[in-house]
Image 1: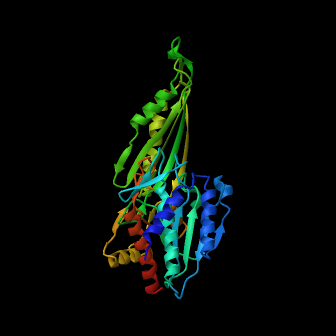
Image 2: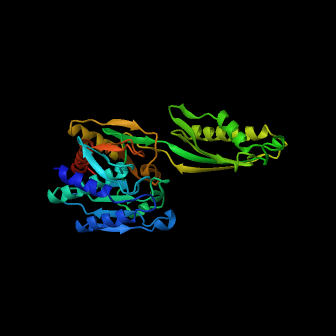
Image 3: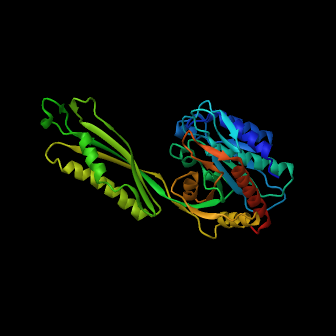
Length: 377
């Protein structure tokens, strides 16, 4: 029942609409028009006031048809990373990719295209189904901001699926929590040629701290990274200021706590080595997103498994290393699993997606909707 030609055309149209984080207004208004044209109730929230963007989150509510099964939430995000302007998608050998020096935007417009196709299929085939809620979030790529500021009391659904993963043929049921760390090292400036011994290099302090940190894959549940470093003002000045920023992730809260402590201790020790020099540091730590883990008996999990088996393509259960809107919504009391649309090499100019993988995801979600209707509430 999935219309491949229509799905691909819809996807290509979405890709050409620029929607970098905090500038999703164009695609939000486009989606509002499409949904209203399908007689779906639409609501935009006030998340823009908190995210600093030009639009809020968009929620579409599709009434159920002859069915009293629990409502299902489907979620995808509207924003893309950069470079995402003037995207020109092309199709080669059944694969969609960008023709230029940009990302493609399959993350997450593949999810959006699938959601729109599902609505059309349900309507034109007069399929019995439970109420369907379609949530398109803003500013996901810069901290899951739209999801963080969405009021879940507006939802009837208590479970659903985020269509936002490259795990084709997999169901992501667990993902880690993450914390962000920023450290500012203060040293003492001096002329690097005339009196270097009078200075304390903040860059050297930062370098010593990084060298002593446990980084990379710490264990099978935990990772850590320093991704940004900066400081100094000129090559002939001993730098008085340097900063580093990084993160730690873990599926285990105690391990996450210990990892952040180890990173901070490395910074403190580097400064303490210069005791009496006036060197100091300032540390900022905040939570990026919480962990998520659905139980084996969750309706989202059991429905997806049985639906995949009905289609002859059983799902693999995936423990992910990244974060998504699902992390936020699970913390807010929903059971939201993550399904892969087929996107690959995301956040790079080599991003691409196989049309067949998009079709597989669409068929699976359609089967889930129908299986939900057949199952007892």
